[in-house]
Image (cartoon, rainbow, N blue to C red; front, side, top):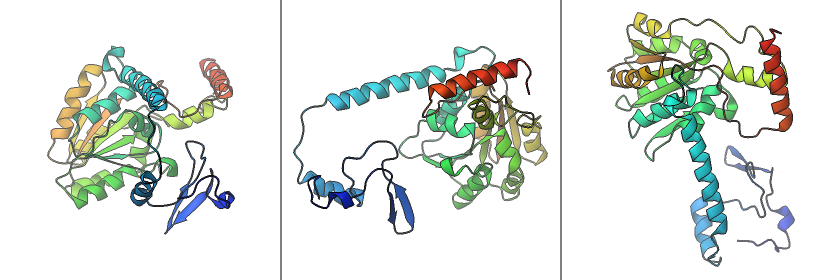
Length: 291
């Protein structure tokens, strides 16, 4: 292992560098600065490092990070509280309840859009559970087909597809494939009657959400039943837990259509003051009917 005083340290990896390993590319320092970049497999690299570093007794940094993490978790728990509204289902509460009621080895397949942010922040993954999502690849509508593929590999696993209403509609024919092949995929639709993330992106540049980014949806539960599967609704907070439990208990494929609060804003990783200002302008324009 090489220290920062290594004479050729300028040739070592640094933040922003793309490292190619076999057929995969990795970007270093995506989340934090790098003082010294080392390329290697984690297990042997850490084993070699532990032989040459001196243990530290100063745990102030660990305590600082742990405190920040606890504060973040408290904020997530507050937003996931199902009782914070009497007549609205907030998306964080839906994602958290899906997580809490899922099987210990469930596989979550998450679509792209606001649903990615809801599930990424509020699903509490256990050690045996798995998450499949395209994330930055932004493959809207891919979750249902992916869930069918995962379920076909192991029909005994609990596979949960978390879809936005737009993404589910884009690839809705895949649900008929699940029915045809008797794949017991469990779909939950985060139904906010629009392209939620598109709304946020427009408002972030001071534009009101245009027509065409909101749409009338079919009755997704009725669609599931029309396909020969089971379909359920949840419109009020007190309906959510029993509906999730019935959907998970269904022997075959099933759809749970959940009407979520369309005005709930996701937790974005980075928010600049300029974005907040422009978002406020967009909301004023929407209120004045400037569509």
